[in-house]
Length: 175
Image (spheres, rainbow, N blue to C red):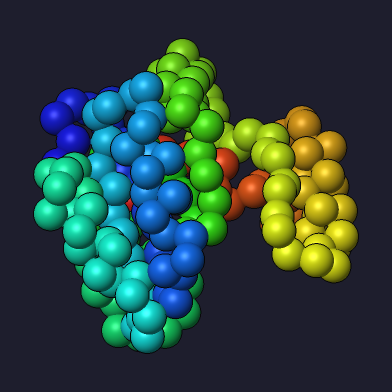
């Protein structure tokens, strides 16, 4: 459990993500900011993802495994929110890697800008999958959306904020 009012709860849903989950978790454990809890949200796995998640949870007290039997990312994220203890909520996907200073920089920004409710960053897309130009284009589209006004307008097109870069104030959900 986080130890202070500035703590972050990271919600990481996964389903059949054994191939990428270990690296995603490792990138959170390697964060320069250490006052966090990582909620690994098992969303009805059928591979070894839950074994990987349990191993991490057994090794680090800040990591908890939560089983959400209803398939779907919305169910998994709602389960995570119900268990989250942090002042800030951060998102992470099972196939993504967080920069080592992600949480540190985001928490510092949120702490000095109380008028900001939701924060995201630009991201880099890399893959070994052939024919992934669509995702590359999508990432470039998201990275070009920089102002709150642009985010407001583009939300009607698609998700203008890369989910694994998102951080928001817990109080927004509570309200």
